[in-house]
Image (cartoon, rainbow, N blue to C red; front, side, top):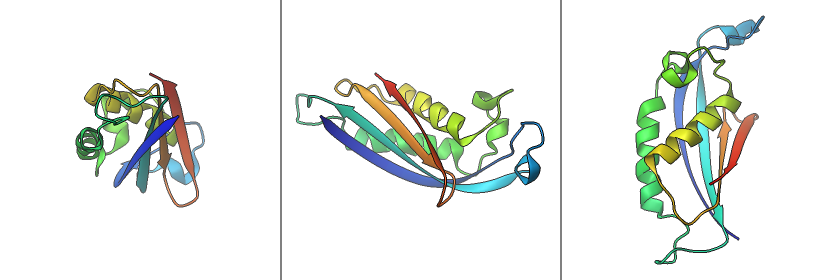
Length: 125
């Protein structure tokens, strides 16, 4: 099994919309770090699982979308609590909309909201 991971970091804001969120119910920032990991049993024609330059280009687009944004204002979080778990899934959805990898059969997105807490979402491709 081959794996390829690329990471980025950016600051974004959100507030939680659950009952009794405490201080997390106020707008606050996180220094998010996200690592996207592709996995698959075979390499493509040129010996890549995924072209790193193509992943970087897709991540540039996503970083521009989320950097300094208030997540609650984005359509993907309309009427949804912008938890780090949901953010990891939404980030993966948008990554796949930007990038159409042919070789890997798995994608995992791990997102840290601080030095101690992270969530991930994994899917078959």
